[in-house]
Figure 1 (cartoon, rainbow, N blue to C red):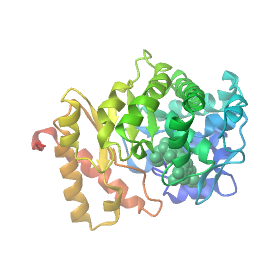
Figure 2: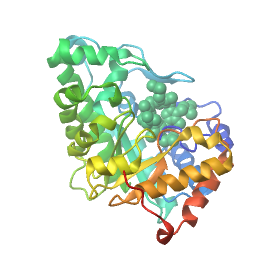
Figure 3: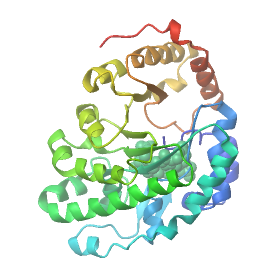
Figure 4: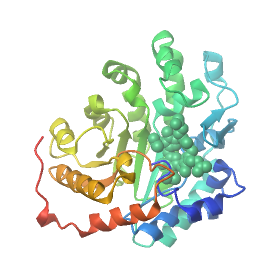
Length: 326
Ligand code: 1CP
């Protein structure tokens, strides 16, 4: 998740004076930031330090991550002419990413690295709006008002995101996650008609590499089956849907990822512990369960709480888990 482990003081110290995207494109710094939460919390996998807008920057688009705002583009992409003027992304441009992944993997030893990219809808939402938005009106209007322009834009985004994931896997990442963080703003019909095929196109770049592929969105309870169909092996569930219910919707053969509620990280330990145990029980009916948070770590999270949650999870033996029924 965005900001997972980036609540750490050692992260803030290292980032001092370096912009977010410059940090992502400095292989040594990106590798070190990726390793920090692994060292501290003893988690079972690392998530690569990067951002979903990195392929835009590598293609030459003027994009910045503005502190306390998020991704901001100097020139939003709103017309057919804007889409036609989008630059080509050269494979060589991924060099800082592949170098960062290779350095990270070498230092991680047997701990796997999860790579990622933004799904076409989420990436296109930033491109059309030019900045974070609540309702994503621009891309949702475009897919109906001008479906050809929408398809051209989403195809461009699928291509750069697919290749971004592929570059990370080829450099040594063990799994890849496609983040469709804002797909929850879409109705099921819109997702099926205008978005699913583009996410499938992004996944097609990494199908057959043998790496598990994870598909995550927030507020996506109504479209979990469509997200799986797009080409995912594992479906990421946000904190809103109980994992036993997700298994009922997706079938017991679908591995799940999820979904500790980030809001409970600041609750009393007893409350948090009971919630973590509930999540473990709820996920135990799935074919596999990658335990994580049901969205990003709030930057104000006390890192000690995260370490304690990881150690609690490691202490639970499969024999003591009582599966929950939906
Ligand atoms: O924890 C990590 O550092 C993992 C690496 C990571 C990932 C997986 C970052 C670093 N970004 C992302 C993905 C990402 N980026 C998503 C998908 C996951 C999610 O929903 O959280 C999204 C939507 C973005 C876009 C983005 N980048 C935002 C969201 C803005 C909005 O619309 O609300 C923000 C704030 C960023 C900046 C960012 N990216 C990553 C970090 C650590 C940060 C914070 C900036 C900083 O520390 O200076």
